[in-house]
Amino acid sequence: MQPQQITPRATFIQLLENNTPQAMAWVTGAPEYSQLSGLVKFYTTPYGGTLIEAEFFGLPNISVQNSTTYYAMHIHEFGNCSDSFQHTGEHYNPASLPHPYHQGDLPPLLANQGYAWSACYDKRFRVEDILGRSVVIHAQADDFASQPSGNSGMKIGCGVIRTV
Image (cartoon, rainbow, N blue to C red; front, side, top):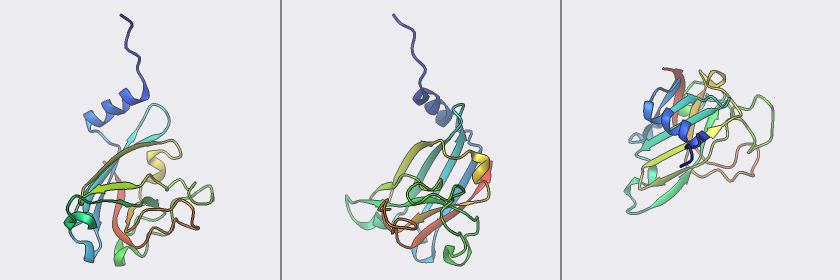
């Protein structure tokens, strides 16, 4: 019997099971989406990147039986979720790249009747790079083409990224 290979996946599972993120963002919905809430956790990995786990409840398709809908999720420049999230700035993009190559461009959320869970690995930023910025949920899926930010619709949820 050969020894078990340790892959990044095994390390990621261990990080998630230990539930010790270095930062989190508690996301709440805009007034018209008050049932929306979620938690995004950011884990430092030994591979030089960040493991991101997101879980959301009350996304807008919650009342549509058996529905699946995509929503955009981005990291924005500023951690100011006031005034219906009008002060979050643009996508986090310190390298001034075109969309969808901003460091703050994250995979879309796939919501099943208002619930979404997602995990991804991103080597474009470290946890310390995004502290004090915001996670923003948009009403539509990101089209990954339109400039400057993917035509993803209004901001329906926001949370500031803070150390744990």
